[in-house]
Amino acid sequence: MADIAFLLLIFFLVTTTFPKDKGLAIVLPEQGEETEVSQRNILHLLIQSSGIVIVRRGESQQEQQMRPQEIEGLWRQEVTANPNLIAAVKTDPDAPYKFMVDVLDALHSANAERISLQVLEN
Amino acid sequence: MGIKGAGFEKSSKASSEIPSSSMADIAFLLLIFFMVTTVFQRDRDRPIEWAAAASAQKIDEKQKNILNIWMERGGDLYINDQLYTMEQATTVVAPLYAASERALVISIRGDREVPYRYMDQLQTALVNAGVVRVVFATQLEQSMQRERR
Image (cartoon, rainbow over the protein chains, first blue to last red):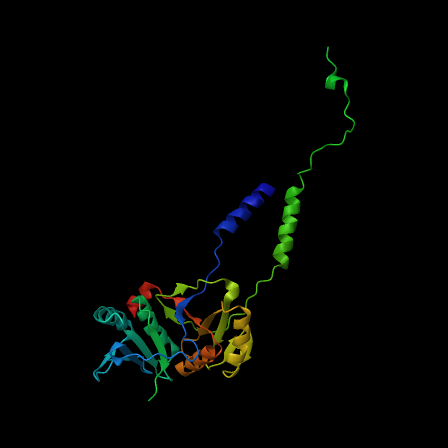
């Protein structure tokens, strides 16, 4: 009987997996760490409270409206044109958190590494 | 006709083997003892609706180096099962971060509907506490769901 119990025990020990937390990792800037970045290297992603993302490239005033899911393709395109590109994600203070996660998710899917999270000031 | 044991008698009749029949029982007892006395250090889950992300990755850190910060829909902040205000966040996290020798990873578990202003305030508080590694905890979004969106 003890043998069977041990076998069962070992079976469950081996097959048990603890659910590991999942998430989107980011690295926060250190306190007081501010770097000047040329406007040319910034892609502004302005998340509205409705979930629509307004995309603005650096200096140009041209704006483009997008859904969060379309950001992935956009980023892949833009980053091949300019490898130094930084994504400045500015979220409306009233926008639900999930829209920011959607955009961050899209950027992570597109292997974006340089991401800045800010709050959108009017 | 030989004499058994070449003429020598065993001086003791006691068995020289350790009895192994009760070994399994002892092992089980120990096992049960440790199972009962082990306490996992975990805070209780808050009732939040998770945000979903398809590119979510496992947090590559030991469980004890992960600090969960819960953010409920109304902007309520829970750290280790206790309610804190946004202003207290820095003073609560900073000593924990120092105690972990800067290895702590903050897992922000926000409700999907929480206004972003609270998230921004929390991030500012974390930067002030000197925290560098932060994870926005999400559920893994299935690709099926993604296509449907």
